[in-house]
Amino acid sequence: MIPTTEKIKSLDRAGEERRQLKKSGRRVVFTNGCFDILHPGHVRYLSAAKTHGDFLIVAINSDRSVRAIKGSRRPILEEQSRAEIIAALQSVDLVLIFDEEDPLAVIQHLLPDILVKGGDWAEDQIIGAETVRQNGGRVISIPFETGFSTTKIIERILKKYS
Image 1 (tube, rainbow, N blue to C red):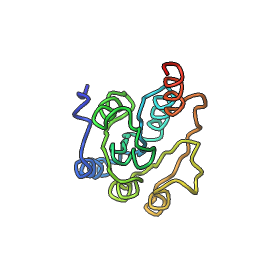
Image 2: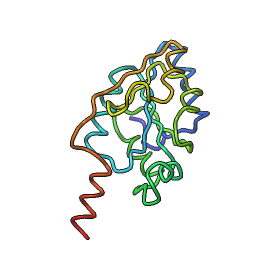
Image 3: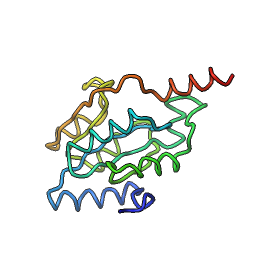
Image 4: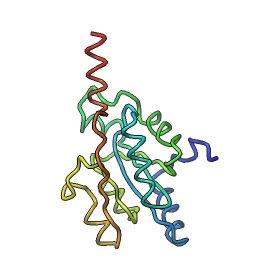
């Protein structure tokens, strides 16, 4: 078993691994997100994503980009902790942290075979979909797990303890 921290790579190292995987004919799946407070919806989503290929890369928003997207009170967990938790999942093969507010540059660098997003994203809104398709890849939308939301979890905690 690969130690969790060894699954966390830089974008350049992830790109090198991607090229090796492509040479060996393995299909690389890519997804991204903040993954601030891990919940069953995340775990199920990442497990489902892995079923579409041989190797799952998960790009996690940096703390700075989470603040830009979600507001100054987020993230709850810092980026290294979030990366380590995601890397500990059996379905995840590689984790990287990116600082941009969207993953387009990461997707353009890696050119995954399959781009996966949750069903809460309309297909025409999935960042990087066009890039992946132009390079012979597929875009897959995984049904959204209702009842699970980091924002809702935070709201419940604040309500209960305020």
